[in-house]
Length: 270
Image (cartoon, rainbow, N blue to C red; front, side, top):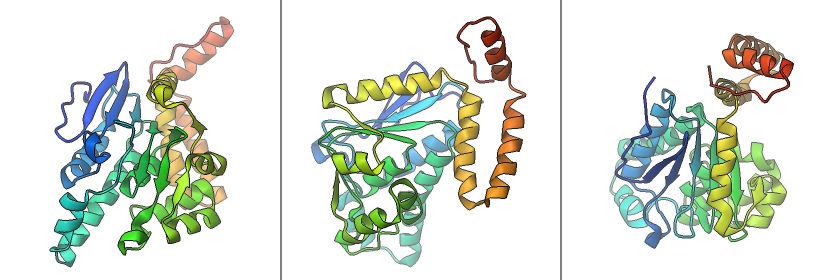
């Protein structure tokens, strides 16, 4: 295993609150756009998180009243116009790799969305496991607004699973903004929270998850990903195997012993 608590990234903010990692993008004056460098560093960080035994959950939070304004117009979109097909594919694969790394990191990710959450920012929120937002959250998958297809970074696969095919179709074809109230009603946001309490509540929620059976959380997240491509019979068998593995953990024994002693179990993730 490895440690990430002392990570000092160059292209985003990182802090630890207990065993919860809190990430924010660090350009609030421009509503926190992503750059080539921040994409790559976030991707690499989530990849490393698989092996980090000092991170049990992640909060991807807002900064300066906004979550993320997507790919930076000057730092990304402009330079892409000069790339050939090979260079363009290198970029689109890299951005998709960030989503793969988030889904595959083995840790629950909570997005705390305030203000602007558009383009790749909306994708980051989508790729998180739980999403909280303020009433001022404005979410848009605006790829068609810049002359592109809406099939970006897994949007056409993941968004319909969250909010339903018809609603996803509308947002993806039009690129229009989904209000916070719509997002909550449609199931994109799990709850709406006042702005001054958003990050605090998201971190508290992540900390509650972090006190749970973290090996079990990893297995849950793994199966949520793998079962997308399984039949029901395959999924039931895969879950039988996964649960049998979890029954070999010490946390399973701890839960039983605590129940017998009429105490609350203290999980240690092993």
